[in-house]
Image 1 (tube, rainbow, N blue to C red):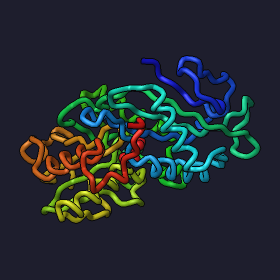
Image 2: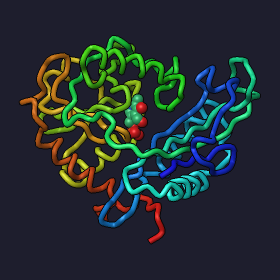
Image 3: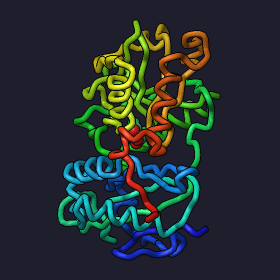
Image 4: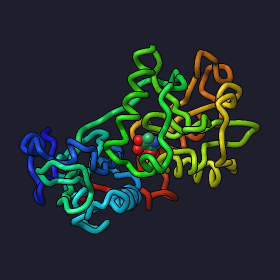
Length: 305
Ligand SMILES: Cc1ncc(COP(=O)(O)O)c(C=O)c1O
């Protein structure tokens, strides 16, 4: 089954969508991206795009930061995405990568007076971390503060920081990096937010901890409150709290909800998937596959049935 792209205002096979070598965004990291999951429901023979509009709202906010003029409204972007995914006719989990970018083929470091464009493509994509339980390490690379590059916008250039941390962790034998803020508090993973279970409550770094305000993070906070009656404290998190947490897990569109078994060679809890993590994971997977009627508003069906 071929993948398709939406590129330069039309749909085309992914293999035909090519950018020029002088494209500004390629040289200066001046683009905003998103990652949207389409989750395959084999019983309903349907792909559900999870929290589609929320992803495009975040993209639009990032575009304001980076002075990228989006050529479409949120509704138009959502419609293009549904059409694009339907066109590919996949019957498996997919991942949509939208990119709003400085498209001029011209050199010069700046945001102003440079043309912008939008593209998106779809690929089949299963698990990202590909482990039941992740082994993590605190990274030697810190997250930037928001006066260096705002971490709450998915700016492509910012992700050199994430890539440095991820490769350091993997090349040192771990699955994922946990990065700290410039002043040494817990921030997030290279592509995920982090949660701890401490004294029966969820604890996660607050918005000021150089994090991306994750859509999965928000989903988990709401599911924990509504379905399990568990409160989430969004606050400053100390590095040492990582080592004494009863449970720990990572959340992200790509990584879903991945339990953490070990951090810096210290076992978390008994090293197995904790009770709260397990319950949240089950709830989360039912919700994203469109199996929980209460949360169907978060799921946009792709195929007309
Ligand atoms: C740095 C970073 N933190 C957190 C997340 C999780 O965000 P979301 O749940 O919206 O995918 C991502 C992935 O988009 C990310 O790249």
